[in-house]
Structures are given as C-alpha cells and as structure tokens.
Amino acid sequence: MRAETMLKEYPKMKKELGLLTFQIERFQGLTEDDVIEMMYFQNHNDTERVQTSGTSDKTANIAIKYKEVMDRENSEWLHYLIDRYWELKDEVDFFEAIVEMLPDKLKILIKGFLYEEKTWDQMEGELHYSRRTIGNYRREAVRMLNESYQIRDNAECEYMCT
Image (cartoon, rainbow, N blue to C red; front, side):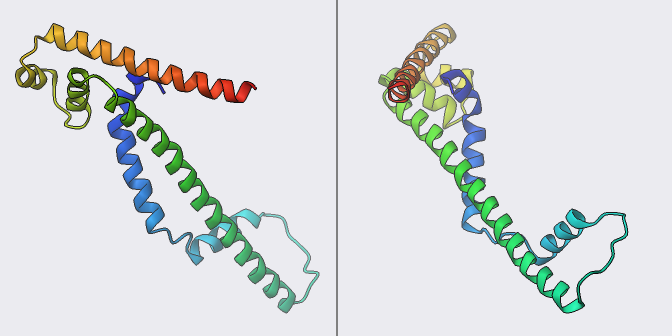
C-alpha cells in the first residue's frame, strides 16, 4: 500500500486488527449444529437413493465424517484469521515505523491526523501553521513515506528476482 491509501485506511486497519485479535484469542470454531447443518445441505439432494449399507455402518460413517469436517473447517477458519492478522499487522507496523522516521515537524502533523484524528482546523490552531503550510508539510510527508515504500518494494524485488 502506498502512503495516501494508508493515511485513509489506517483507522479501519487498526480496528480490524483489534477485531482479529479478539476473534483469535477467543476462537472456539464451529458449533456442532453448524457442522450438522453444513453437512446436511452439502450432501442433501432431491434424488432418491437406494440404501446399500446397514444402519450401524451409516451411523459410524456419519460420525467419522462429522469429526473430519468439523476439524477441517475449524482449522481452515483459524488459519485464515491468523494469516489475515499477520498480513495486516505487517502492513500497519511498517507504516507506523516509517511515520516514526519522518522529521519531527512532519511526524507531529501526520500523528495528529492519524492517531489523534484531528481536523485540519485543529492542527492549524495547535501548530500555528497556515492551512497552506499544513498542506505542504502533508505532501512532503506523503512523498517521504512513498520513498520508504519504494525502498521496501525494491528490496523485495531484488530478493525475488535473484
């Protein structure tokens, strides 16, 4: 992601990280009813079938399949949550790190917009800068952040292309 996108998406990404953390910490997986319903609708069709095995075989097969389905679905869901968490965390951590590398006057401005969710008017009053100066500083910060993204992209490309 580039700086401009991150400036817009950062609050939403932080919220999603918090929600993912909550879901992973309290992960319980599918309930028995969820699995039974899923298996019923997955295997149910309107054609008639001829019974070829006894009731006890059918019951044992259903029980085995039920456990396999539940374990697989729970494992896939948890892996998805964890993968999404680490992907998002990596992007947010990188962005926060490059914001910290900005010169102080730019860092204060970007942090005010992002972390404290201040408006342009609030930043103007607090920093005693004109709106034009704030706009110029913001553009400079975005340029510097994009340079950091470019450095990261180049390093990844060098590694992948060799």
